[in-house]
Length: 194
Image 1 (cartoon, rainbow, N blue to C red):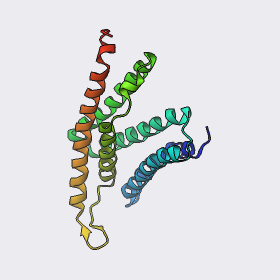
Image 2 (image 1 turned 180 degrees about the vertical axis):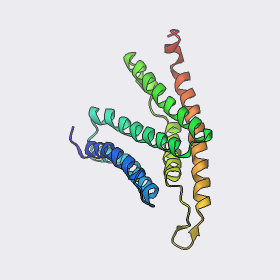
Image 3 (image 1 turned 90 degrees about the vertical axis):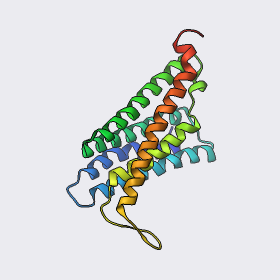
Protein backbone atom coordinates (compact mmCIF):
# COMPACT_ATOMS: atom_id res chain seq x y z
CA UNK A 1 0.00 0.00 0.00
CA UNK A 2 2.81 2.44 0.81
CA UNK A 3 4.65 2.08 -2.48
CA UNK A 4 6.29 5.14 -4.04
CA UNK A 5 3.54 5.52 -6.69
CA UNK A 6 0.82 5.35 -4.02
CA UNK A 7 2.64 7.91 -1.88
CA UNK A 8 2.77 10.25 -4.88
CA UNK A 9 -0.96 9.74 -5.43
CA UNK A 10 -1.71 10.52 -1.78
CA UNK A 11 0.52 13.60 -2.08
CA UNK A 12 -1.72 14.69 -4.97
CA UNK A 13 -4.78 14.42 -2.72
CA UNK A 14 -3.00 16.47 -0.04
CA UNK A 15 -2.35 19.15 -2.67
CA UNK A 16 -6.11 19.78 -3.03
CA UNK A 17 -6.52 21.93 0.11
CA UNK A 18 -3.23 23.69 -0.73
CA UNK A 19 -4.60 24.41 -4.21
CA UNK A 20 -7.81 25.91 -2.79
CA UNK A 21 -6.01 28.04 -0.17
CA UNK A 22 -3.49 29.40 -2.70
CA UNK A 23 -6.28 30.18 -5.19
CA UNK A 24 -8.03 32.38 -2.61
CA UNK A 25 -4.96 34.04 -1.11
CA UNK A 26 -5.31 37.86 -1.13
CA UNK A 27 -2.09 38.33 -3.12
CA UNK A 28 -1.38 39.28 -6.73
CA UNK A 29 0.17 35.89 -7.59
CA UNK A 30 -2.63 33.69 -6.16
CA UNK A 31 -3.88 32.49 -9.56
CA UNK A 32 -0.36 31.80 -10.80
CA UNK A 33 0.39 29.91 -7.57
CA UNK A 34 -2.82 27.88 -7.85
CA UNK A 35 -2.02 27.07 -11.50
CA UNK A 36 1.43 25.92 -10.40
CA UNK A 37 -0.05 23.63 -7.71
CA UNK A 38 -2.46 22.23 -10.31
CA UNK A 39 0.47 21.70 -12.72
CA UNK A 40 2.38 19.89 -9.96
CA UNK A 41 -0.62 17.63 -9.35
CA UNK A 42 -0.88 16.94 -13.11
CA UNK A 43 2.81 16.02 -13.32
CA UNK A 44 2.50 13.77 -10.26
CA UNK A 45 -0.39 11.98 -11.99
CA UNK A 46 1.84 11.08 -14.92
CA UNK A 47 4.75 10.24 -12.61
CA UNK A 48 2.90 7.81 -10.33
CA UNK A 49 1.62 5.79 -13.30
CA UNK A 50 5.08 5.69 -14.88
CA UNK A 51 6.74 4.60 -11.63
CA UNK A 52 4.09 1.95 -10.93
CA UNK A 53 4.89 0.35 -14.29
CA UNK A 54 8.66 0.91 -14.14
CA UNK A 55 9.12 -0.33 -10.56
CA UNK A 56 6.46 -3.05 -10.97
CA UNK A 57 4.59 -1.58 -8.00
CA UNK A 58 1.06 -1.66 -9.38
CA UNK A 59 -1.46 -2.46 -6.66
CA UNK A 60 -5.21 -2.73 -6.12
CA UNK A 61 -5.07 0.23 -3.78
CA UNK A 62 -3.22 2.26 -6.43
CA UNK A 63 -5.76 1.28 -9.08
CA UNK A 64 -8.49 2.56 -6.76
CA UNK A 65 -6.92 5.74 -5.36
CA UNK A 66 -5.30 7.10 -8.56
CA UNK A 67 -8.55 7.84 -10.43
CA UNK A 68 -10.10 9.14 -7.20
CA UNK A 69 -7.24 11.64 -6.79
CA UNK A 70 -7.58 12.73 -10.44
CA UNK A 71 -11.33 13.23 -10.25
CA UNK A 72 -11.12 15.13 -6.95
CA UNK A 73 -8.50 17.57 -8.24
CA UNK A 74 -10.24 18.16 -11.58
CA UNK A 75 -13.66 18.60 -9.96
CA UNK A 76 -12.27 21.13 -7.46
CA UNK A 77 -10.56 23.01 -10.30
CA UNK A 78 -13.76 23.07 -12.35
CA UNK A 79 -15.78 24.37 -9.40
CA UNK A 80 -13.19 27.11 -8.78
CA UNK A 81 -13.19 28.35 -12.38
CA UNK A 82 -17.01 28.29 -12.49
CA UNK A 83 -17.08 30.46 -9.35
CA UNK A 84 -14.31 32.70 -10.71
CA UNK A 85 -15.62 33.34 -14.25
CA UNK A 86 -19.40 33.16 -13.59
CA UNK A 87 -20.33 32.80 -17.28
CA UNK A 88 -22.40 30.06 -18.90
CA UNK A 89 -19.69 29.01 -21.38
CA UNK A 90 -17.50 27.97 -18.43
CA UNK A 91 -20.33 26.55 -16.31
CA UNK A 92 -22.03 24.33 -18.90
CA UNK A 93 -18.84 22.52 -20.01
CA UNK A 94 -17.85 22.10 -16.34
CA UNK A 95 -21.23 20.50 -15.62
CA UNK A 96 -20.80 18.20 -18.62
CA UNK A 97 -17.32 17.15 -17.44
CA UNK A 98 -18.37 16.54 -13.84
CA UNK A 99 -21.51 14.68 -14.95
CA UNK A 100 -19.46 12.48 -17.25
CA UNK A 101 -17.15 11.49 -14.39
CA UNK A 102 -20.12 10.53 -12.22
CA UNK A 103 -21.81 8.56 -15.03
CA UNK A 104 -18.63 6.71 -16.07
CA UNK A 105 -17.70 5.88 -12.46
CA UNK A 106 -21.16 4.39 -11.90
CA UNK A 107 -20.97 2.60 -15.25
CA UNK A 108 -17.60 1.05 -14.41
CA UNK A 109 -18.95 -0.17 -11.08
CA UNK A 110 -22.02 -1.63 -12.82
CA UNK A 111 -19.89 -3.37 -15.47
CA UNK A 112 -17.45 -4.67 -12.83
CA UNK A 113 -20.38 -6.34 -11.04
CA UNK A 114 -21.10 -8.15 -14.32
CA UNK A 115 -17.43 -9.09 -14.76
CA UNK A 116 -17.14 -6.89 -17.87
CA UNK A 117 -15.13 -3.93 -16.61
CA UNK A 118 -12.67 -4.26 -19.52
CA UNK A 119 -15.34 -3.05 -21.95
CA UNK A 120 -15.28 0.36 -20.21
CA UNK A 121 -11.53 0.57 -19.58
CA UNK A 122 -9.78 3.90 -20.16
CA UNK A 123 -9.59 4.59 -23.89
CA UNK A 124 -7.12 6.69 -25.91
CA UNK A 125 -9.90 9.26 -26.37
CA UNK A 126 -10.23 9.43 -22.59
CA UNK A 127 -6.51 10.15 -22.35
CA UNK A 128 -6.81 12.95 -24.93
CA UNK A 129 -9.71 14.34 -22.92
CA UNK A 130 -7.61 14.34 -19.77
CA UNK A 131 -4.63 16.03 -21.48
CA UNK A 132 -6.82 18.80 -22.95
CA UNK A 133 -8.60 19.21 -19.62
CA UNK A 134 -5.36 19.65 -17.68
CA UNK A 135 -3.94 22.19 -20.15
CA UNK A 136 -7.22 24.12 -20.25
CA UNK A 137 -7.57 24.23 -16.48
CA UNK A 138 -3.98 25.41 -15.98
CA UNK A 139 -4.57 28.35 -18.32
CA UNK A 140 -8.04 29.21 -17.01
CA UNK A 141 -6.91 29.09 -13.39
CA UNK A 142 -3.86 31.23 -14.13
CA UNK A 143 -5.48 33.70 -16.60
CA UNK A 144 -2.31 35.78 -16.97
CA UNK A 145 -2.60 39.46 -17.83
CA UNK A 146 1.06 39.97 -18.72
CA UNK A 147 3.46 38.57 -21.37
CA UNK A 148 4.84 35.09 -20.64
CA UNK A 149 8.65 35.10 -20.99
CA UNK A 150 9.98 32.18 -23.03
CA UNK A 151 13.55 31.47 -24.15
CA UNK A 152 13.66 33.88 -27.09
CA UNK A 153 10.47 35.95 -26.94
CA UNK A 154 7.48 36.93 -24.85
CA UNK A 155 4.14 35.28 -25.56
CA UNK A 156 1.18 37.64 -25.18
CA UNK A 157 -1.19 36.67 -22.38
CA UNK A 158 -4.00 36.65 -24.95
CA UNK A 159 -2.32 33.73 -26.76
CA UNK A 160 -2.18 31.72 -23.53
CA UNK A 161 -5.85 32.41 -22.84
CA UNK A 162 -6.97 31.56 -26.37
CA UNK A 163 -5.04 28.29 -26.10
CA UNK A 164 -6.72 27.59 -22.74
CA UNK A 165 -10.19 28.25 -24.24
CA UNK A 166 -9.39 26.03 -27.23
CA UNK A 167 -8.28 23.18 -24.95
CA UNK A 168 -11.41 23.70 -22.82
CA UNK A 169 -13.59 23.34 -25.91
CA UNK A 170 -11.67 20.23 -27.02
CA UNK A 171 -11.90 18.73 -23.52
CA UNK A 172 -15.67 19.28 -23.56
CA UNK A 173 -15.98 17.68 -27.00
CA UNK A 174 -13.82 14.67 -26.02
CA UNK A 175 -15.77 14.39 -22.75
CA UNK A 176 -19.07 14.08 -24.59
CA UNK A 177 -17.76 11.70 -27.29
CA UNK A 178 -15.94 9.41 -24.84
CA UNK A 179 -19.04 9.22 -22.61
CA UNK A 180 -21.10 8.25 -25.67
CA UNK A 181 -18.54 5.56 -26.58
CA UNK A 182 -18.58 4.08 -23.07
CA UNK A 183 -22.39 4.06 -22.98
CA UNK A 184 -22.54 2.48 -26.44
CA UNK A 185 -20.06 -0.26 -25.41
CA UNK A 186 -22.12 -1.12 -22.34
CA UNK A 187 -25.58 -0.64 -23.86
CA UNK A 188 -26.32 -4.39 -24.26
CA UNK A 189 -25.85 -4.84 -20.50
CA UNK A 190 -27.67 -1.61 -19.58
CA UNK A 191 -30.64 -2.45 -21.78
CA UNK A 192 -30.82 -6.04 -20.50
CA UNK A 193 -30.26 -7.49 -23.99
CA UNK A 194 -27.13 -9.35 -22.95
